[in-house]
Amino acid sequence: MIRLARRLTGTTAVCVALGAALAACGTAQAPHAGPPAPAKPAPAAKPPTLAAGPGGTAAVFMNGPRTLGKTVALTFDADMTADQGPRAAAGEHFDNPALIATLRRLKVPATVFMTGRWADQYPDQARSLGRDPQFEVANHSYSHYAFTGDCYGLPTVSAANMKSDVERAYAALLRAGVPHPMPYFRFPGGCYDNQALRAVGALGVTAVQWDVVSGDAFATDADAVTQQVLDGVKPGSVVVMHCTRSAAPTTEQVVRAVVPELRKRGFRFVKVSELIGETPGHR
Image (cartoon, rainbow, N blue to C red; front, side, top):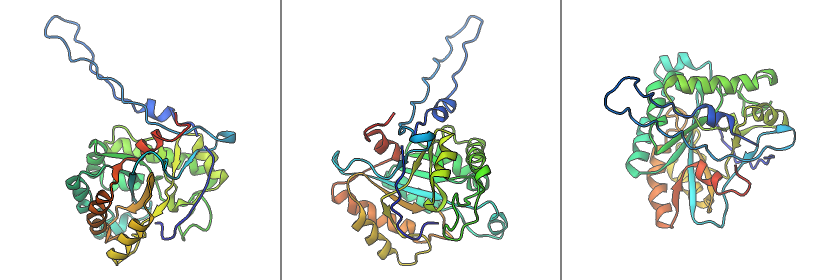
């Protein structure tokens, strides 16, 4: 979970392999006479990504251009660590169906960064989000273990296992029924260094950070979180929030307040992919 604003910078990454690998398959034409087979659907458009940095380090995306209109991306981390299964079995809620229902009702596009463990726990919800064009689902690691030391008390994944942890998360998303996971990765806790960027860069993902911390993690004062978001948003902003009832209980209430106010101020809600697609140097 993210509790403090982190203004992290990084280098830039090519991300093409995952998009191509996850393209949709069509229907083959029957060999015998009869009604024509349905046309093979066009492959899914390749998501925009950023060019790789030195040594293949993953690009780090913080926010979109400030000069191309009042756009803002709301992003939601669906966090669940690899060892939290017993807590879920005991009734703790790591999902937030009311939040997703509110986003749908308000017609707000959003990007959900989902851990593989969350997708394993809530496959029906993962599938629903992944097949709804209002949303895009991206990778938040499998285990939600930190990719650096000293990251908000999170357990740490070893350097040797960083790449496989991300791959395991993509496998979990596909297994849950997310047809086209995005080639975007968010580090647990937002913590990374050059070693972590090299590890995930090998997978062609773009690392997505943020420029507005909502402060919803562990918050109980929805008004304070709402004001923090409204004070921070600028054209092209990426807002980080959470999709976990047990650790972010005010988020749905915050969304109900933030969305109409930002629309009143002239902002349009977009997914992260649209902001990346507007960024100079995207591929």
